[in-house]
Structures are given as C-alpha cells and as structure tokens.
Length: 256
Image (cartoon, rainbow, N blue to C red; front, side, top):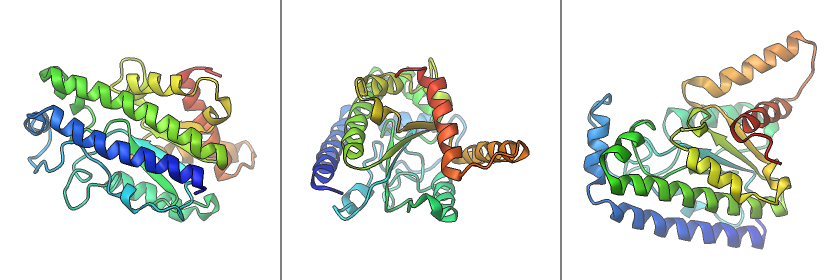
C-alpha cells in the first residue's frame, strides 16, 4: 500500500476496533438474544463473540497490496469463535478462497490481497436471525441499524481512498437482503450516498450472490455456458464484471 492507503487503512482499523467494543457493550443481553434466535432452527453452540472484530486486520501490513474489498453479510458461527474471530472462515470462505486459488489469472490471493468486511459485525448463526434480534430488543435494533450505517460509510471512505491510488474493486456479496425491505437495505442506501460525486470509484462497486450454497459459482458458470453457446470469447474478469455490474444496477438502479 502507498503511504496514503496505509494511513487510511490504519484509521479504519483502529476506529473499527473501538466501535466493535462499544457496540458489544451497548446491548448487555445480546448473547442471550442471539442464543434465543438460534434456537429457532439451529443446533445449540457456544456464543463467544457477539460483535466480531476481525483479527485479520491486525495482521495487515503496509507491504500488503490490497486489490479487492469483499463485504459479506454478518459473522456466523465459525467467525465468532474465540479461536477464529475472522471473517469468511466457514464453508463460504473456503469456496471463495478456492475460487481465487483456481483462477490465478485474477492475480488475487484471497487472504493476502483482500480485505474482508461485513455489513454489520453483529453475530447471528444465520443472517435472517438479525430480524429476531431487532424484533425482541429495541437496543439490538438500534445496534443493527447504527452498525450498518457506520460500516457503509467507513467502508466507502476506505475504498475510495484505496482506489484513488490503484485499482481496488469492492464486491458486495449477498444479493437478496440488499433489496427493498431487506435486512441490509439501510446499508445499501447509506453506501450509495457515500459515493456521491465519485463515479470512478462507484464503477468499481459490484454486487454478487453469496459464495455459500455455490450461488456465486453457479451464476458464473451459467453465464460462461451461455457465452460459449453464443460463440462469445470473454475472459473470467469480463464475466465477473458483467455479473457484478448487472446486479449493482438491479440493486441500486442507474445511480451514476
């Protein structure tokens, strides 16, 4: 990273670490609420970190070349474990890591050239459980809203600084809950507003389906098959751009 990029990352990292500690203290019964939410459809498991700051940020150095920011939904069971406290370390993370490893032409090492963030650091076993938290606690509802707004603004600011110096894409992974009335509609609207006047950086924002359940890979494969059937020769990067841009326009409209 350049000195400007490194300063921007350090500012984000330090502020995020403080905010996660603040958010964890804001709802004293958050662990209890998360356990009750999980009981609906998830086997019992120990809740160790109700609001997750990723340890991966502490391992980043100025020597890291950040080429991509990936924004998932929120930390799940694996991510909140004390032994991990890192994002995308479960099945979805393995799929993502394997995808980039099998496609070296993209020039991205998923664990070295990527910053992995979430739309909120509030843990739930399943993303849909965030609705349970919000419905059963005013404090939890406020936390989920505040954390989404903060994450959207801070992520947009970091991304725009990184991409001023070198090309850095931002992938919003998770399509459905960004839609109208989705859990992350507030994140969507806040992020969009944060790019006002910066069309160059906004063009680097792309939207994809989840890595989980192979949704991401399935959609990519379908496009590849369709293009081959039509006799079109497109690179992997071109196919990714087509999918990511199409979904961005579906979610955000023709903003710029």
